[in-house]
Every structure is written in C-alpha cells, then in structure tokens.
View 1: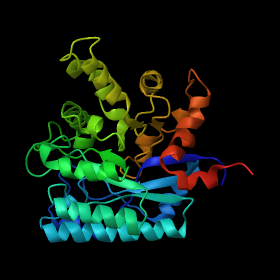
View 2 (view 1 turned 90 degrees about the horizontal axis):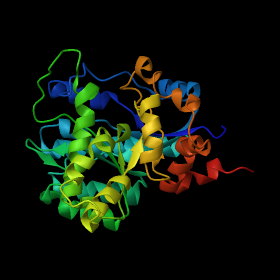
View 3 (view 1 turned 180 degrees about the vertical axis):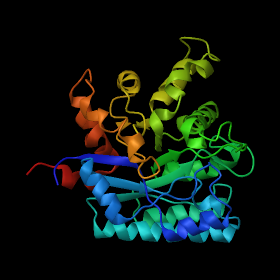
View 4 (view 1 turned 120 degrees about the vertical axis):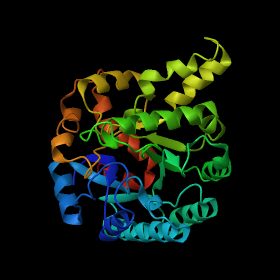
Length: 322
C-alpha cells in the first residue's frame, strides 16, 4: 500500500453488538438497526477510498446499550478482544479505539481502560458525549477521577456524540445523527471547557468528531463570559484550539475553508464515518479532501496521514519512504 489516508472516524459492527441493540429495543439515536459490516466490505471501502489505515471504533450508544452493569462490561471486553485480533492480523490496515463501559460505572470503566491500553495495546479510547440517564456530559465533576487517570496515561481520546436525554424525533427524516449529534459534541466540549477538563488534563489528546460539531463556529459565545484580552479569555480560546478535529461528514468547501484557518497546526484528521454514513453521504465529503484548494497544499497530506502519525507513532514505520 502507498501513503493513503489514516481514517480516525471509522466504525465496525458485529453480530453480537447488533443482538445487544435489538435486545435493548433498538438504537435510541433513531437508526433502524445496525448497518451491515464485515472485514471484506470494510477492505473494499478502504481500497476504493485510498484509506491505508482505519482506527476502528464502536459508535454510540456502544456498550451503554446494555441495561445491566455486568452486561456493559462484558460487551466492552468482547468488542476490544475482537478488535485487538483484527489489528494483530493486519496491523498496518487496522487500529482501534477501545470500547468502554459507561463512565458512570467508574470502576468498570477504569478497569477496561487498563486492560485495553496495557494488555491489548489499543491506540486510544472511545468516549461518548453524555452518560447516564441525566445530563452528565464530559465536564461533570463525577468524572474527574477518570480524567485524572486518562491524563496520567497520556491517552488519545476519541469523543463520539450520542443521543441527548430527549430522543423524540422532530421529524422522521431527522434521526439524531443528522443534526443533533453535532450539537451534542458542542455541548460536551463547552461543558469540558468551562469545567477546565482539558486545561487541567493537558496530556490527554482529545479528538472531536465531525469537525467539532458547531464548536468552531460558536465558541466565542461562551468565551465572551471572560474579559476580552484577559488571561482567562485567552486560556479558553487556547483550550478550544487544542482539541483535534476529524473531517467525518465535514468535507464541504465551506467547512474545510473555515477549519484550515481555525484548527491548530497538526490538529486536523481524516475521517469517513463508515459504515453508519452510507456511500451516498460519504461521497459528498471524503472525496472533496482531494479536490479542495487548501491555502497550503501541504495541509492535504497532513490531514490524510501525517497529523495522525503524531497520535499513533506505531504506524510511522508503514508511512516511511524506503
């Protein structure tokens, strides 16, 4: 394989996950079932889209779909051992963000973090924007102990949106991922920022899905709580730009034009959102990365794979010219 793309927003499904979703009464985000996925389908998609490496993750609601605490822990472990085998069989083509129990199951969560990173050598961790039956977004004080441990481990963290507490659809065509997911990403990011989660845990490398939702466009609103030019204001702005942003379903000219100036150098990453985003959606975004006229042509390769290599150094040997 040549120097293709490293896709950091790339999902997988399995029969046992589909069964868990069905047993729970369906996906609360509004998806009708779980999309078809297999290693063969995945490799075909990757080859057609010049994706050399996929960092696989289980999308929301993930293990949290299971009602029992024990069941959530078992599903997370089963997913991670499945992913580790895929990675071991094809370490250049696949990596994975570990599936975790709910953050509200703190002991189980931290136990799986340790197993995934220490034993399975996961490339990072998947967190969702909200946990529990209430509004416990990622800045919630209950999660401080967990963030302390993730910071100690210098973890790469992939934050994927999940459904809000209210799952009533405004319109049957508007499942949660269509519009609500980007706002959930924004809410959890701002919740983290105002509670100084990234500021107090600088070793965590945090990736926000879908170009950060609406955060890049709205962050000046919460930032305006601080006096312009003050240290507090600048610290807030710096913390916003310290996030990493993937380009999943965010490859339009409008978004790329904005993000090339907004994102901190090295912080834009390639993403597809396969297979939950079907070909009809992906074709509006992923191919445009090859066509868009960046102000710096070098940025294209940086988004494709170079920026990701800083987060996943084990892949560097596959992206080095002989």
